[in-house]
Amino acid sequence: MDKDRKEALQVAKELTAKFIETRTVSPGNFAEIFPAVYRVVYEAIRNSADETDGPRA
Image 1: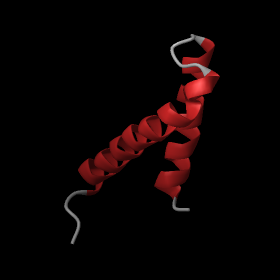
Image 2 (image 1 turned 45 degrees about the horizontal axis):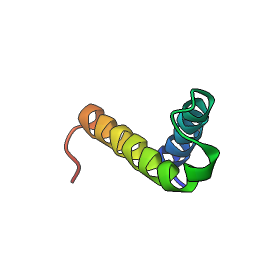
Image 3 (image 1 turned 30 degrees about the vertical axis):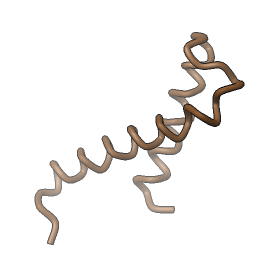
Image 4 (image 1 turned 45 degrees about the vertical axis):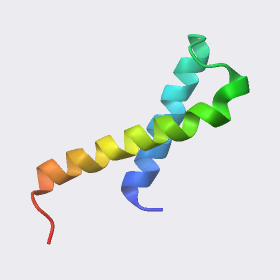
């Protein structure tokens, strides 16, 4: 697992846990919500990396 995916996984887990704590997400629909949270976090990390690294060849 590359660094970006590992970071996205950790952040998505923390965000989803906070959503459960605030009752925005229930443990029952965790499997439905987590992939979407992970995808958004991963895309944000990748977009941020693209902006700081410049264009890729």
